[in-house]
Length: 532
Image (cartoon, rainbow, N blue to C red; front, side, top):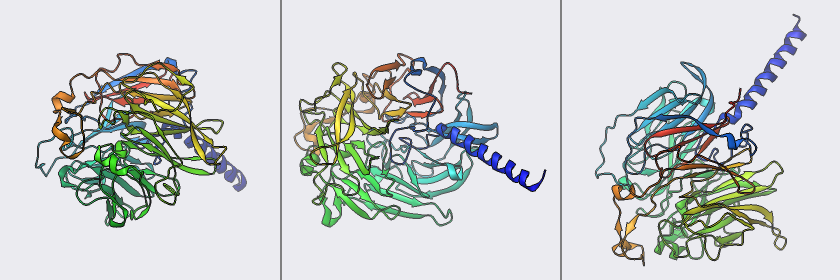
């Protein structure tokens, strides 16, 4: 073969390899909510569709050895494709267990490829309970470019495991205080992020980053958002990272005084890595949010683009959905959103009602952008008029909006479209192929007993329920598939799942849907005719 032929052959082979890799990109769900923006949308997925999702069924169920700690057993699943393992190249599903276990499962069979368990060298000062369970809580994140899965142990150490073998290739490096309550890891440009809430283990609330480019000299930064332990960031997704490079997080109850560096009941934008404060949105009623324990932080925000706008949507226990310009949060006075809509929690309860978990955003094939909001409890009497409602929803629902341009202001606006059927209660929505997947958890969301709360301090005689009480009156979880545009139910798993789940999420990859439950089961749903 002459040089020209060899060169042509090389080009063809390279093109085929690129084409193959592009075709297989759909099999990755590398972090909570699929991507750093926490969109919840598997954009490359082309197996599942509104036409075939009714054929979904359980492909396998795998019981893992992890023992639940308080309300938590396994983290939300994440997935990597094309992983070189001792058994060949595989698509692998990863979950972490409460007691510092990490499991890698073959996506095709559920069989364990490897399992790791970290021995604890430090013991917690206090017994664990559901508010501070002393467990591994943060969903890991996958660094596909380096073949690693980053995991944050209960002792506060970050370590990186080889995707194919589970061998430690990074760390462990002590990052956050032991037995702090950490939330889903995020990754961008070789910097890993987490957030902390609730003062567990004596850890102050804030945003934490670790630059892992030089494994021998990782660089750690933190942004403490209030003196003491207020302003906890406990949305399921931790941070959302915009494609503009900014890091976003919603804070919980706490003092607001921007001049002093206190950012309770606010939405923050910080710089990558160094975590310098760049911008913030603090609602005009931020003092009432803190007084009545109505954390904005109950749901992680989602960053997305619409036409030439870069936007952030979020909400919290108050049940108010807000839309922000991600480059100018709250406008010049930091208090003015593009839009705010009351969706739920007319009684201003600090438990059981409101917007929880995290929002999702999907751009359909025609370029329209949709926002999905998981709501606990019934709709507010002040909620906007939705053209389509699927009956009463006393336990919870998903409210869906289309992003449009306001004719009057020329700015983006959320237009109500449909409200789902009743869910008990919904996790953040995962989207693929025009289908919205919703996990109804079956969790008992009651947290306390006693008189109605009047002010946050002491909760005025309200007694916090024990682990055992929280685990009563639960129901088995159900996976639903809805038409993402209309809300019509296309599939439900019925009684396939045998237990409930607390603060979890859904993963979608290569025509399969993955969820977990409180009994440490991993479930894989797929179609009758698997993709070849």
